[in-house]
Image (tube, rainbow, N blue to C red; front, top):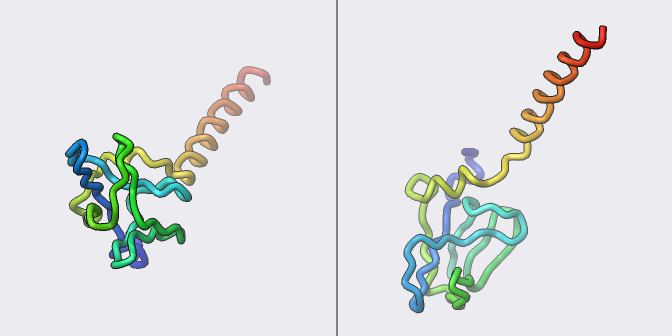
Length: 109
């Protein structure tokens, strides 16, 4: 993790209606769940998006008082594992294209 993001982390959403404890905020702009800061006004994402509240998976609105900061090290690593890493996707596509080209080259010539 870069020094720029070392104070960023997850935002846990505590809903009084459904009482689920595994609901985390996900940015609608950059689709990340690991780049948040919690302040007095609400939540700020590293991409520049700001939120004054969250919507639980049950549909209930959760205000700032129901949001809790969770550091990256203590957060749900499964969420960050599911997020798309575009450099990795590009490397994977390039690798597959190189293999396909190599097979085609040796079969055609």
